Length: 273
Image (cartoon, rainbow, N blue to C red; front, side, top):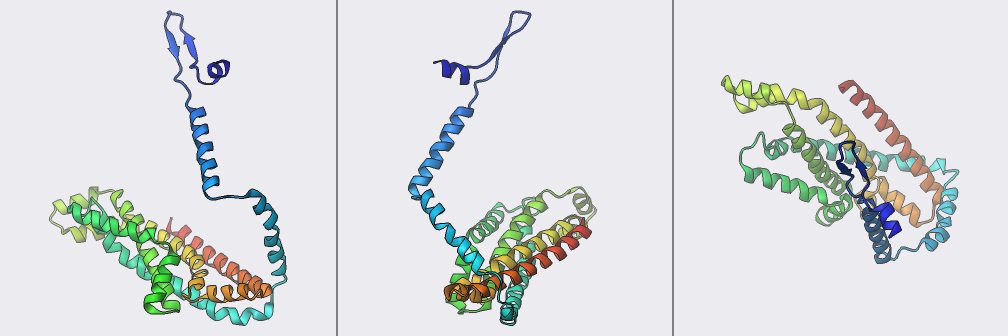
């Protein structure tokens, strides 16, 4: 009971006028207990073994040290798959970002009065965004065969759903004052949208597209694991062959590439703000 009084019993103050004010009872202990129970249940259901993690974790350092120094002579074999990865990311991101624009307009409630159309387009974005890129790439390889085309399709689907969701939310938060004024003066909705809404959204839209492209370069690097082409294929092959110096060189080249793309993207976004 003493513990209950200290933790759960509400604190009260007596005012000079004789009234008593009581602080609401803290729910923090209940939240802590529920959180601990959820964590314990998750560890039990997933059969998490901390001892095995610590014991087998040493193999990570063994593999990491085996990658260095990297095999610099393997650089020429990396460049073609690396370019394929960049091309997959760029084409998929570009096409997905462009196609997302008309669908985002249809999904915005302040631009589309038909609630059924709004719901269907938003559901489309949700379903496509829920599918992991690796799963989409695997399905694409069964349909179109192994190669970079399947990877491009997977990146296109993710970019379309991601940019579309971000864009329709931005459209709904745009200032509609000038848009409504132009409509009142007899302008068409499409012309009013181009003149008033697009200038508001263009910097944010380009920034989002660049951020999406950065992420897609990383995603494309692992699509080779399901046969979708790019640098991921030779990465998977060299890991399977235990050619760790080659793996180290692939990771170094990939790191440099991602850093360069991020630097250029950051510079462009800086000029947009």
